[in-house]
Length: 196
Ligand code: SAH
View 1: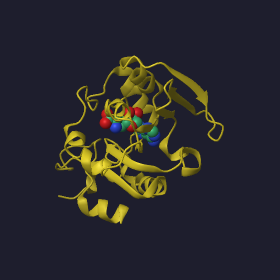
View 2: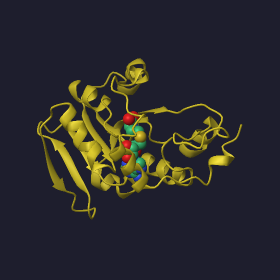
View 3: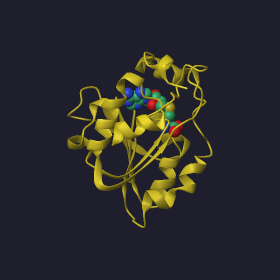
């Protein structure tokens, strides 16, 4: 099967905000993702105190896991509701400040300093603003990106990672002619051409 029928499909930021408002967030996993547990060693590769990036983070509980393991977590999420729910559901005190480089953006940081969530579009970020990362957990991120934005997304992610980084990517395999997405169907061949 090919992803032809999804190529033109666009989910706007406004629609994502509405999903959060309506509680239409079936993608959120209270228990965390089993594949992160399974491949944690690949992500960490024996290293400690990593900077780990969560693109399109929602309120993923895995951010808390990794922070509790001593890593520094940075996420980006367009919904402020999602970001606030993350901190309140884990009873984490936080502070909030503007991001001088990005108009309208805010950064929410746990008081302990090890979880920083940018509330803005991922396309507003660059390594000049957030630095570079040793690891990436990409679940519900590449597959949530509009098909027309995939190359831009991949280029940004390549810009955001250190040379010796590990990138865990979760995709979903299904017949794209039967579902409109998201999550979108991203064939392995496309992942190879996006990331090289
Ligand atoms: N990775 C999370 C959430 C996946 S759903 C998880 O595993 O649970 C995709 C998320 O991306 C939604 O919360 C949506 O609000 C957010 N999002 C969509 N487009 C975005 C963009 N351009 N920049 C930042 N966040 C975005």
